[in-house]
Length: 309
Image (cartoon, rainbow, N blue to C red; front, side):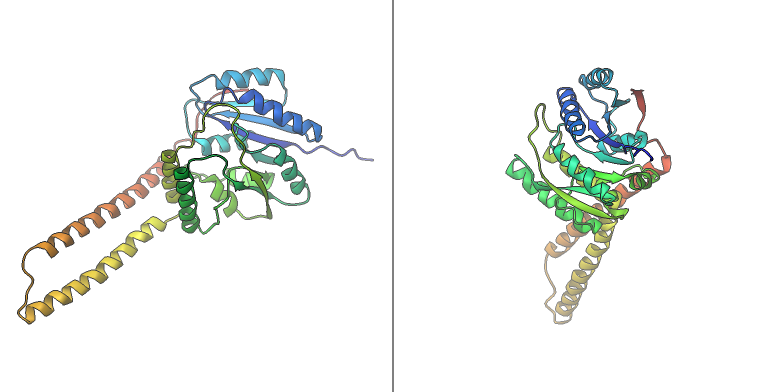
């Protein structure tokens, strides 16, 4: 009789200035996994932290054989950290979650059992966003509405908290784009998927890295990396402006023929300002896409690893 081989769950935890959360995350996740008899590995990815995050990872790695670590030479961003962790993972399925445990580790158990039932992607969806300022909640809601329309994927409650089968991970790893939008791409690849709801937990220590400013920067970067909608908007604005220009042209010719030509330069000034604004905005959007193309053409690595455990 063949002995059943335990399947490994790889858990990837990007960390940026999270020295106070490393040990707590390791203890909480391992306690739950061991009690549920799930074979697992923890992969911490230090995304160029300025504090003692890497030293904390080294300590827990020496104490626990299931802990592995990657340290970047500088801060390359969360998306790069996720890809780096997935690329070294050995599990038949992989989960990604926040190191501050705002993604509850208890939910991993439910995700794992759903994967055992045959689901290839198990998405963690938020039932609540936790404690945030009203302004930040409005900004986040607006961001997800815009990005859902831009990508054609409902991302109103999505998060980076998800579990994926190895075949899904392999599909993500072969994608060579430098500006990878992980949340959208993990939905874009398809496969059999389901959802698990969770409440965002409070951080045990440290401060969140997600300010309203960083959220806006995240929105611009990922919308342009995953969608051409902004460029299509430029075309739409051009058509709208052409429509108003035709109306004003007809009005001007009519008044000229009737002998009641417009006096002054108010209309001309308004038109010049409007035209100049549209041209500058259009050039800015096109320039941003050209910069993205330039980044891809240079073919620099997504990240540089300085240390591993």
